[in-house]
Amino acid sequence: MVRRRGGIIAACIFGLTAVVGAAAPAQAVDPVITIDPTPAWAEIYANNPPVQLSTSTTSLDLKLPSDAAALLGKSVSSTLHYRIYNTEDNTATPLLSGDAVADPSTLHVSVPIPQGLASFASGSMQYCHDATGSCANTTVPAQAYSGFVVVVTGTPVAPGNGGIFVQSALTNGGPTGSSTVSIDLGVPQALPLTFFIQKDSSTSLASYTDKLIFRSVPGYFTSGPDKTWTNAFPYGFFWKQGAPGTRTDAQVNYSADGSKAIATVPTASIPQVCSTHPESFILGVADGAIDSARYALGKVALGTPQCTQRFSDVPINSSFYREIQWLATQGITTGFPDGSYGATFAVHRDAMAAFLYRQAGSPSWTPPATSPFVDMTPNSAFYKEVTWLAYYGITTGWVDPNNGQRSFHPGDNINRDAMAAFLYRFSGTPNWNAPATSPFTDITPISPFYKEMTWLAAARISTGYADGTFHPLSPVNRDAMAAFLYRWQTGWYLGTQ
Image (tube, rainbow, N blue to C red):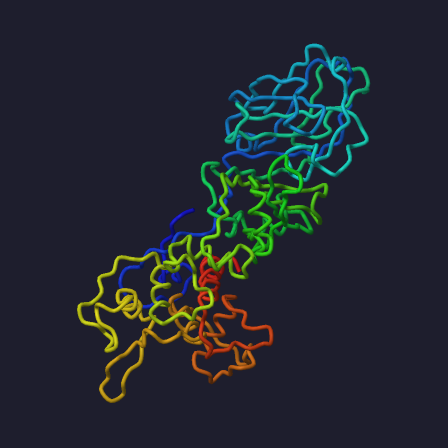
């Protein structure tokens, strides 16, 4: 996880107008794992038509694709590794393996077969496009032909070295001919797996509650890796390799421009994910359906996962488990001394200030010696956080028209309309034209904070209630506050909505 800069000034990143104040505070630790589009290595799965070879063939001349160096994670003039299998399962024992160096000008690499293909028993080709990593786990039956698979990889075969896999490339029984047969590993039928990224396996996720964002170039996830897919379909799942029944599907959506895919663990699936302890997350892009003939896969290793219930009153099947876990992970809340979170307690205005201050990364701030509010002193709880909020214009408090003095009402519950105003200002007062027709039945364009509440809805930070109301004067409970802050950070601030 990375640390981002921003806080309320984060809105500047999105071309918005920030409030006037001191230097920008540090943004809280980013809860989203971002997968960089530039791979350290990659793999190509090529669905090629069979190449019929004579059993007397003793040498294969393999033509690598033009981007082989990027895919293999090393120069083609470096030592590469080749293997020939009876199956697509690259965890099986190869029939033949060795090292070779490709010609960097022609991208050709020679693979000798001293005894000829006649020395190998052909195997029934298996189709294992379910990304389980083992053909033994696939429910798709073996292909109807016999043959071999040829693989070229970086060496040693380990994370950091990619591979070029050619499925169904070789079959016995071809016409007698030259003992050297040329095979193009970059034929048009091949589907490039443009990224296969292994997250550092020593980095564990604290819990399966966060989003995974796979970033690419605009249009990638809507047109497919080769920009020609008419129905690029995203899917994602958690998987423990070699353990059937541990797959848990995720919710995957595109960003509007197709530049990233956002994968989220469904709240209802968190108990299943936590109980199975998957080792990796698979992001797939298929042309029309999962496990179709055209597909690409990205893999993220999850390291050593931990699924722990942080608070006694927030079990993993709670409605806002994800959001409250995230709030604690970010250090925005520590809960209460008895080990509970107080999910159903109302949030007081001073506690709201503390939430926002911590969400901004608990920036360096020296509170004033004289309180700007008549109902708070430097010894008041959350005095530092409240004065920071006031300094940045996120709150103005109440002004007494008789003497001009300001009060904050720190112990009052914060209502949903005021919460909307706080988040709107915290975001840098975004440029937003409130709709002429209210999206909620219980507020109108003349309601206090109408602009802020409709912005909150447009940013998908709040959806209101199922009956079409917003309940502007209802207090915000602590579980709902966690949800609002989580959606603000992972949705609006990071632009994934």
